[in-house]
Image (cartoon, rainbow, N blue to C red; front, side, top):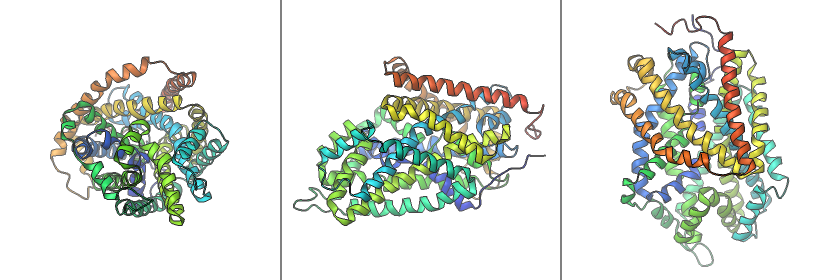
Length: 507
């Protein structure tokens, strides 16, 4: 007999919106436009879409089906989802990445998310009104250097909101936020995108039409396609934007019933994310910034500060010149970023809660507060120093994702077996999954991931040996300690299980 599930989704719409919210994050609006500018403009969409088709969609199918499979045995986190699918005892320790990564990423992501919350407040309060561009930049620098108590206050508020919502469960917390946050995010995005594209040059105002910025972003440099660096950037963006290789998709899917569709759900969530990123993400920050700073000014700013700098240093100054509408624009922009952030960070907490409930009988509400406490402790170095922030981002938010994805697709296609895997993908499917994806999942995606990882090895070695501050070393020590701690908990949990916790896994 399969184990019963203790929680579930209230509706299919809620599930798809929550999955899309998990994928749609700050990177859709801040990271993607900067990546496109730095990697060939319109030509970047070629490697980007190739990576989406050969790696993104296949991994979505794999992660959704692995999650639903694990849910049959009452498992909602990757250590024992992997354990149920693999024959060797070590697979569950590869699954540790699915808990470790969510905790480590949430530790810095929630702090970044709190910036959007605080900038929403500053927009309403008129803090940026009358400030010059230089003054807004100085305000941002002073903020992250803890020149006031506001960063800590808003960070604590943000952590509390995340923890409280998670404590309400999937249908009562996460799903409700997704049903409110995602429609508002898309509404705000459409309004701002129309504003950006329709921006008109005027005396004393914008120096370019908004369409000039859109053309600048998408003007292709086809020579970039032959650069391995561009392909690595495209692959990294797909990982980042779809929240692949983290374990959060597995957890969300594990609360589905065994015959519920995963194929159409996965495609719906994936393509909704692509719409937000490629259509809305490209039509806001760059057209508006080029409209006022010019192409050269934006190019220089992106090379120095990235999309994050444009979003938090440039747009507040520009919105402040728009009068009353500028207040609404600021609230919509930073509100959009906050909704994008919180729907992603909520997904990071659910695997931890599921693991604690499944294996240690800790209620989800209690597990949520445990997760919040861990994020509070791990996040302190990120608040104190950008060095710690960057270490978490690189090791947990980049390298760990690729390693996890390589392992899971080998486990799914070659250990669990493509025959059973393909059947799992198509069970209850509301669409006919093209047969070509069977070949892609088994051969193309693993090779693709291995090539990306091998190509990143020089960068990994460079980052591992480079000097950093005491905060950077603290972050590295905490990351190693976190991984070891989770592995120990997995070991203890396995000891607590019976001799055959997966009675149907050999059927």
